[in-house]
Image (cartoon, rainbow, N blue to C red):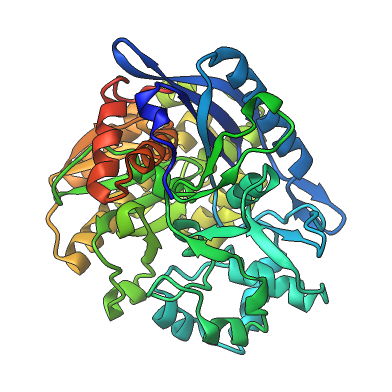
Length: 473
C-alpha cells in the first residue's frame, strides 16, 4: 500500500522525524510555487543516561520531544499533513509486554554489557558463521548481542521493535521491522529474511520478531496525542538513518562512493546485491539494506565522535573555532596518525587520554594542545577514509570519480579537503540532514506508487535542488 497520492496532487505536507543519538529532529515538507520546501520545525538534544543497571535511553523524553515537534507541524501546515515517517540510528530495541506496553527503557548500543554478550554468543555460533549468513560487519553493538544480553540476564522473551518502528507503533502503526533497519540486527540472512539458524543459536524465539516490510510501506494511520494528525498515514521510510541518508544523495551512475559523516563515519558504495566475498569478510565490510532493494556496502568507523568526546573533556563546544585552528596546524605524517578503529576509542569519556594512551604504546608523545589534537583526528580520519575507499574499489571492481559526503561532516571544509587529497577524488558536499531528504524521498516515491531506486533518486534530486550544498534543513 502506498501513501495517498494527495500528498502530491493536493499539496499536503509531509513530516520526517529523524532520531539521532545526539539530537532528534522533526522536519516539515510543504509545497510552494517554487517547488517543495523543507523546514526544520523542532530539534532537541538526546543522550543516553548512566543508570545503576547500565547505559539507557530516556524513551519518554524522546517521545515527548517528537510529539511537541508534531504539534508545531500541525500549527504550521494548515493544508493538512498526509504522512509521517521516522528514521533513526539502528540496533537499539524497545521491549514490549504482552499488553503492548514498554518493558523498561532501551539500552544504548554503547553499553559495556554487549561486548561480553558477543563473546558468549560466539561460543554458540562463531563470528565467521554469522558473517557467512548475514554479510554484515561483526560489532558488539549489533542487535543480536543486545537481545542475547537480555537472555544472559534472565529477562523473559518479549516482542521487540527498533526505535523508529517503535515510534510508529506508538502512534497506531503495526508491529514491523523495516528491512534496511533489520539488516543491522545480525538476525537477517543475505536473502533479506529472518534466519532460523541465528535465532536458534541465540536462543531467541522467532515468534517475537516483528514482521519484515520494505521501505515505503504504510503501516497504519496516526492515532496519537496530536489530534490534528489523526488519519495521517504512518510510513516506514528507510528506517535506518544511514540508508535514509544515502537515499537522500542526488546522484546517478555507479562511479560514486559515499561517506555518511556524523557521530560515526560510514564509507562505502551502493550495490545491486550484497557482496560477501572472503575479502569483504576479512576486512569486515558490511552489507545493509538500501532503498529500492539495493545494498549498502560500507565500513563503519568512529567519526566526529572522537572530536566531540575530546570537546566534552575540554569543556568546549566551539567546533568551528577548532576546525579553523586545526587548519593552521601542519599535517601529521601517516605513521603518526591514530588508529581510529581502536575499540578503546569507541568508549565514552576521557578521549584525549585514550588517544594519548594509544600514542604512548607506539612510542609517540602525548598531545596537549586542542587544535593539534583536532588536526590529528582529521588527518587520521581522512587517511582511513582513503584506505577504506581503495578497499571498496578493489573488492567491488568499481572505479570511483567522486565522493558524496553527507551529514554534519559535510560542513567540515578542512576534513573535506583532506579527504579529497588523501583519496584523490572529487568531494561533493550533500545535505547535513541527508537522512531527512531520504526519508521524504521515500514517502514521495511511495505516494506515486513507484518505490524503485530510480524513483527515490529522482525525488531526492528534486528535494536537493531546493537546498544549497552542505546546507542544513
